Length: 154
Image (cartoon, rainbow, N blue to C red):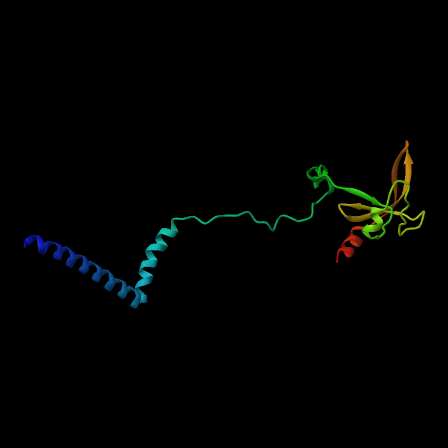
């Protein structure tokens, strides 16, 4: 019978441990004034940790002091798409499929009107067609100011 009592004793001991743990938890939750005592121990540990230090950003200005401070090398090699628009028109697909060599498409601009110059889809200038060394080119006649470009985005 001693073997039969041992498991009961272990179970009783385990039950007593659980009861003691639950009672301790109930006391801790019931008495909030005990929590600061635990917090003091945690505070002592946090005192050993140093605070991070950061350099002040207030001394740095957003605008460069001189033109020499600007380093444009970062953006000089970014590719952009430049396109010139002579004019536009709208037509149904039926008429588009009937176009062949020698067909004339009427555009919404008059002859001699300036072309639109777009960079990545944004209008930046107006110009006129020129021929240089048997190649077409464009002479810019009017460059759109950055403030006007921003106004058109709104």
